[in-house]
Image 1 (cartoon, rainbow, N blue to C red):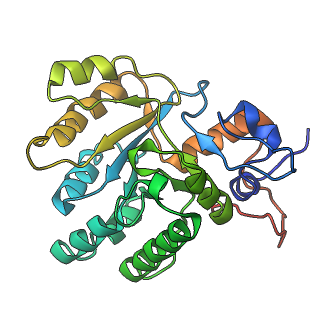
Image 2 (cartoon, rainbow, N blue to C red; image 1 turned 180 degrees about the horizontal axis):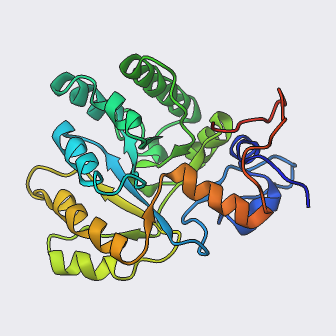
Image 3 (cartoon, rainbow, N blue to C red; image 1 turned 120 degrees about the vertical axis):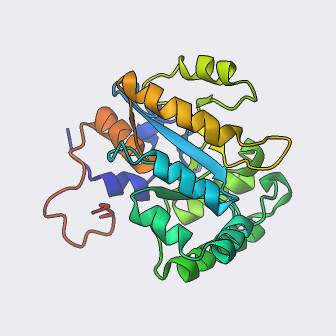
Length: 264
């Protein structure tokens, strides 16, 4: 079997051969590649991705990162909205640099958290480019962004076209532990499965209170005890590609191939 690099798939995300790995991954009758949509990673590996949407409150971001200090191999993925990033940086300058420096991953969640269903393709493209410009200004460099979660989980045609045109993987989820009742949250966590993508938030104010932070503080040690490793979306995606195509990840000697996209 041909060996492909991880970036080959990230850049070509949508190839028909990947249809077994993603629920919405195909080539249409016109021969156009459709965007990738991922709901979970490989079920063969004891790994899952805990992802956090919106990303308001820089103190919550800091608390979440600090929770992983006892687990240096664990990382989160943050699907940030632009409005939240602006406020985070105003309240705690440099917080998003810290997020990436500590090995966490950044995902796109629109600038203003508008339902993609009411946005045209051109407005979504402009929104993504504005979001990327903000992140470049905040970070001081252009970040690698491969995953995009639509607000309200709305996989509209315009969102799928955005992902296709910007080389993004539309990212949903297979689990969530949010509940005002901690016992219920732990019951949900007890059902964790290999490859789960877990959706969480960074709620801080009523009516939600601090429960995402509190839940994470309980869930992370529990999942570690169950033998799970918490990985970024890129790591989860990579395992899925390896499983489907026996890929060795980054190809040695791929040179300047147009599809070389290894994330060294």
